[in-house]
Length: 385
Image 1 (cartoon, one colour):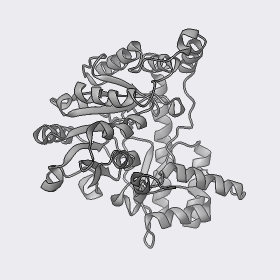
Image 2: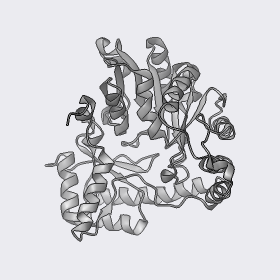
Image 3: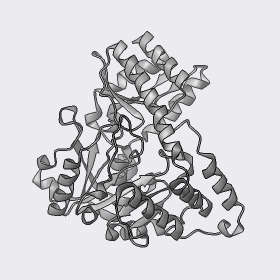
Image 4: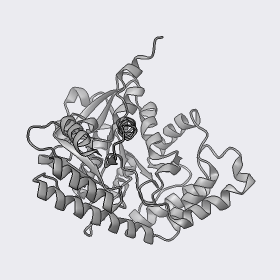
């Protein structure tokens, strides 16, 4: 059997491998605690579930949905962007619902890149930025995000021969996996750089609502010229504890949105209407769940930071996201430390190099687990460090 070369170039998906390790350890009788996957343990709010149930019982919604999403859902997204970021969006041309933002991130390279084109990838970054480029036949070029540069890419250091072939750049702030945030000055620089070089920005912003200590995350699109520069991905997954519902969107530059829509309409048949109605309720219903959720994650963040301090492990205090990015102790690399913690403590953590070469020397801990189990996981790691 002969497979496409792109499959041979495709690395195993990180979180699928983590799932497999958890299953193997549990089958062997190990009480595994996973801090590996950022999957909220908090439930989806009841008002959202009620909206789904009501619309799921309407036979009208049992047929094919619109390829471009319900107009009412696109309008709700536009209203939310206006209220939250003061960004004006045309629901008809500048908003495209997605079957989770991961789907759109994987498909954007198909819309933008031909074989031989370059996709600029934040390193470390969400693995789908890289795999989407590989599946499209494009060449990924990693942009190192280093602690010395506050985990921001140095756009002026991209080689000219790479820049000449670059079609798009994928990055996200607040950042996964480093939990770094970006100042307005960086976004202004990014917009100017993009428009100067004709490189489309695809900014991934699913953690904008998970912030602490008074920090308020921006949208890339709120900066002048951003809609000429590119698009932004967003999702209901993390803000409303809806990872399993698979609903998100892309918004921004109408030409890029149309191109991504052409890819999608040839690949999928849209989102179940009842889920889109639930999405409207999420965006326009009571928002107290968001602040309450942030309080929970802040408490867990503080628990982790206190434990890391006792262990002598270094990490910046996150102002956003559901992750803590931790330097590995001396004598280990990322994979070696993650393997040690799993084998000795029965705790899953994500090795930093799985997010790109510049992730070497770090591991990622997720806050999406009950407080008592999180405390137990930290105690186990401290005992076996």
